[in-house]
Image (tube, rainbow, N blue to C red; front, side, top):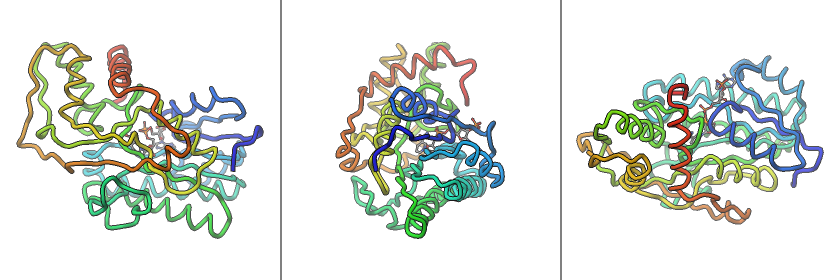
Amino acid sequence: MANTTSDVALVTGASGLMGRALVQELRDAAGTTTVAVSSQDADLTKFEQTLEMMERHRPTIVYHLAARVTGIMGNMRAQGQAYLDNVRMNTNVIEAARIAGVRKIVAMGSAAVYSDMVRLPMVEEEVWIGPPHGSEAGYAHAKRGMLAQLEAYRDQYGMEFAFCISTNLFGPHDKFDEECGHVLPSLISKFHRAVQEDQPVTIWGTGKPERDFLYVKDAAAAMRLIGRSFSGPINLATGQAISIANVAGLLKEISGLRHELQWDRTKPDGQKMRSYDIGKLQNLGFQPGSSLKQALRETFEWYAAHCDTARR
Ligand code: NDP
């Protein structure tokens, strides 16, 4: 169903990487009142606080982005916490939304829900096939559980939903943690530091694995389209995978690093390839607004200007 002019959109996780971009996107578009909430407004692991917040704002559509997000190393080290916190938040938000009469939830899933067993490019119809990769199983199962709850609530209560299966995101306001963070912000921090110290950069693995990186501003534009007119699971990606070596080459150029890149081949590469079928997203009229190089440049420049205060 399309948005109406009386739509009130509530965005959870609004202080995060994706939340900031989505709030900006929704506020720039006419016709929706946007309420931005973070853990300061309600601890979503607590049901009473979640319900009170939902009833106070009475949204018609909820973009549920809040999550405990730590990147692959963080998720590996704290599987139980990633599972429990995310299950609690997701369950509370969906149940509180039902009670408050929310028409639609657009929930943020993750490509971690896909099993290594599925075909490439990954298609939404195979989301339940095989177990998710063990390294992030706690986080991934919490996301799968959210999809199961959304399907059950649609069937019993008629609550509409979309479930965004998002690839790696990056952009301003990310967490730039070199050890536990996501690959791109961690690389950006490494390149920035290396240039400051006039040192070479050492990158884990061979550089051969290919990933699909989505700029958060493009992800926000896609999510608005999804909120307006899509129901069900949908891949959120560019549809174009690039090797880590090529991304590192772009960052070398953008950062002005003078040293050759060094690869620590004793470290694991992870999966060779992660690629997504984005047919459903393209049918909504989605096209990335920025090239990867341009988006990396904007993010690098943002980080360079905020490296003392950026989250890690
Ligand atoms: P961030 O870590 O940048 O932001 C997390 C947000 O969740 C913050 O606004 C935070 O609020 C909020 N939050 C955390 N715990 C609670 C809590 N107990 N109660 C209320 N709010 C809470 O995450 P991203 O923007 O990177 O991720 C957004 C969504 O996208 C998540 O669902 C994530 O799983 C998904 N995703 C992200 C990817 C990525 O590459 N970043 C890739 C695929 C999926 P506060 O600031 O107040 O702590």
